[in-house]
Amino acid sequence: MKKKAADRPIEKVWGFCPRCGAKASKRGVNPFHCRECEYTHYFGPCAAVGAITTDPEGKVLLLIRGKDPGKGMYGLPGGFVDQGETVEDALRREVMEEIGLTVTDYRYLASFPNQYAYSGAVLPVMDVFFVMTVRSFDEIAVVDGEIDAWHFCHPTRRELQNMAFESNRRALELFLKQRSVRSRERGSK
Ligand SMILES: [Zn+2]
Image (cartoon, rainbow, N blue to C red; front, top):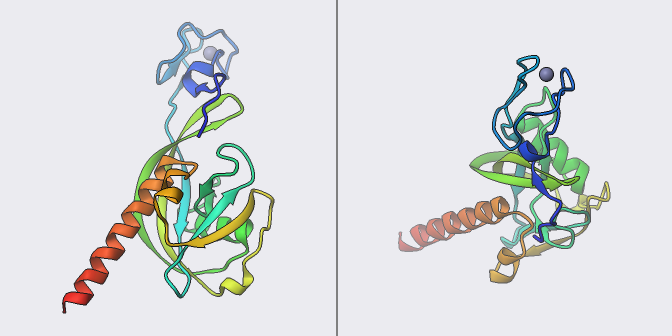
């Protein structure tokens, strides 16, 4: 993903105390600490969810992103976890909102840290990945304009190198590796 010059880590963008409005005495440190009112703010990651699913032929569902960051590149279904929401509920909600699919089952795959450049700031994110099954791919549709299209494929270097996020690429590589080990194990029995 092309990184614009204006995108800076959130702790460097954070110029004023959100509690009392005093100018930050020092930018770019984590946590932010206000000398005027003692307010302290930690720039920890927010949570997001990503999902891998395959069609009956074993092809992986990739989305083509309709918006920045990563417009035109590949991504996995998913999105940010809302306040008060579980990661599992976010998985079901995001998959429905983004691509119209009903999640019927899922298993945890892995988590990978991510960075999300938006509005001139780069936010730390913790992406939690699941392998999911859905009720029916007949329901697939571009729902909310976050994506332009979908693409079922056996991911090759081309897809892996064009993932919008490093975390998504790592999750996909892990999934493909686990799947190939399982199929080898089955083959050797
Ligand atoms: Zn303050």
